[in-house]
Length: 163
Image (tube, rainbow, N blue to C red; front, top):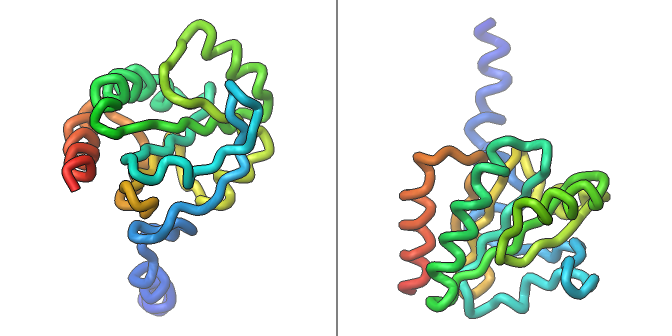
């Protein structure tokens, strides 16, 4: 057992949550398709704004709970330069489109049924949110969603808006 721990320990210590996208790195390109224009998402168009990129799926209960909070937060802080782009990863985009008809949000929605963006970001769980500063740098990675996360998420966003 001790030898196993000694073998695993260096990997655990060198792991900073093993994201392909790390805090402090530039946000990578993501080939998701925007719903309103059917064009490929270009995250660079959001430079100058604080951006939350949120990976979600209809089969993810915490994702569904986060959407009303994110929608309200986006609508409240949009005038200050905050925006959200959601990336749906359902294999059947039509399922997500139908879901959104009964649970609409005001922020930008994209679809990635092939799962290319989660591979690029190496998403480890659902939902996963990446908070990006005005320069296009990932500043916070948040996995999961609980109502108790709301205060911390709001504080991180407001701090970046103040920079």
